[in-house]
Image 1 (cartoon, rainbow, N blue to C red):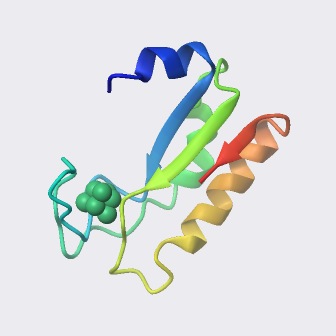
Image 2: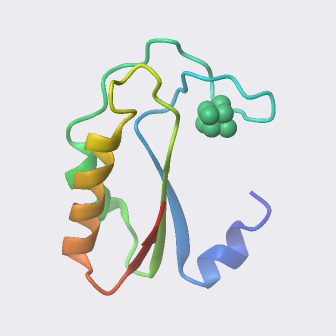
Length: 95
Ligand code: SF4
């Protein structure tokens, strides 16, 4: 991650949710393909704020693609955002 140092200095960090494998296989991406990934971790939304360092002022939430889920993971994104905003309402989020 060539820009990681600059991003961290500016208080920005990206969090990848919904697993470590992806249902797609983009050739430029290093995330492994898995057509049937495990179900999303139900503890992830509530656990993410604790993983967020206090210096993070701008959190980018992204995810692997979950074509296997009926809603694509939307019902996992919503509580994740809620949990982060509850912990720090002043922080900004981007998806
Ligand atoms: S995480 Fe994104 S870029 Fe990587 S394989 Fe999945 S869809 Fe493609």
